Image 1: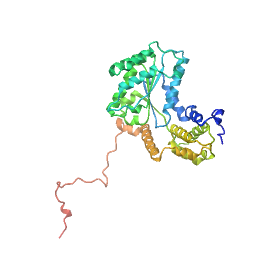
Image 2: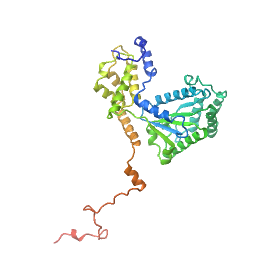
Image 3: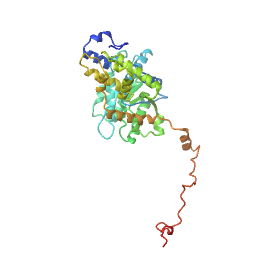
Image 4: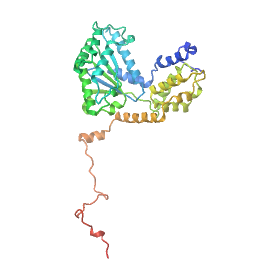
Length: 371
């Protein structure tokens, strides 16, 4: 049967297999609860560089962070147009690559930002008028230039282009080195924000949290936003997950089996994605790609494309560690650290051992056998 409230265009029922898969991969966006909450939290901080100079949005792998970043870019361009700011590039999105070596390649990242500024996506920038000197930035990609020279050119271009928000995705690739380098990396980003008056948004997995020695000074410099997975044990989260899952089913341009909507099936689907919406959508995308016959899509089809149990266990461990970072400590612990309360001294009870009166190495005569 088709989904009773299907959301895909009618023509897709008779479309080719590839057209159906293309639609499911790129043709829609489900505005599910966790995405909406994180988007609202992030949008609240935007264009407030004085209060939120660096915004750090983190969550588990496959939760939907990149989709969130893309939607934020669109909102920034839309807001600029509504405010009649039709000149320049109000926002720049860059995915941080994995570089080799023992330290992060900042020169390479600066060049990527320049390239993104020189060639923004047409669908985002067509309503914006770019500076006349737009193409001049391409000369800055010469490898003979030093990192400092490229950095200064980048700062000038950000100011010239009127960039208000700079988004770095996959930020864990910067902070995968030592804690000392991680601290320096945040200092570099903060300096870039200070000089250009540009707000920096960092998007990454829990790995970026683990690899930074989060001192009080570093915490003060950033505003953390947690993009949660769905928690099955939370009743509201469980209901929201079901709604999000149903939203995905409604966009499947194939007939689907009744076994996809049973209570046991929904729990199994949750296990497949560890509560992460992006993993679930990707799993269904893979199952549709393999769905070459006209038969109905079943739970077994989706399960055949799911991550292995070992991979899901690893993701679950990373989720547990990441969520612990956001757990708030107790007031009692804070009071002890601030000296408001004192730890209770150990009382001398029955288990308190008396001090020995004999010298070390001397035999205790009470242990000798009496003849």
